[in-house]
Image (spheres, rainbow, N blue to C red):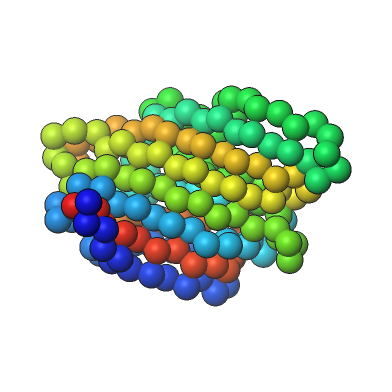
Length: 177
């Protein structure tokens, strides 16, 4: 598969990053990669939401499910569970990608999200993500999510943000033919 870097955004004290150009029918898959995202506010959730072509507001219906693995720094309470609080059932709210990321110098989140056929006007848009983060409770976790954006309207805008405050880091968008 041909993978092409379409956009790279360095985040420096911004509240959100939007990819509003380059999401077209040219590519059947888009990969967003997130590098060392560090929020200014402790214990905030990193999320995304989409906007349909010709529409206003980031409020598309999303169905999703998640699973997480975590390990505390003090070696206690490692676990695997279904994070039902991050799931949506045709919800229009923020879709969580990484939970409760800490704001310390040694705390951040990194990961990737794959979005399939966002330009389709026939089918829902499937996606999945994988993140690793150091949480505010001094635990490292892996969070895997998947779902679909339940619309046949083409998606041409994707916005990423933390639940509170600004953040720093880098986000890149790749197209896959």
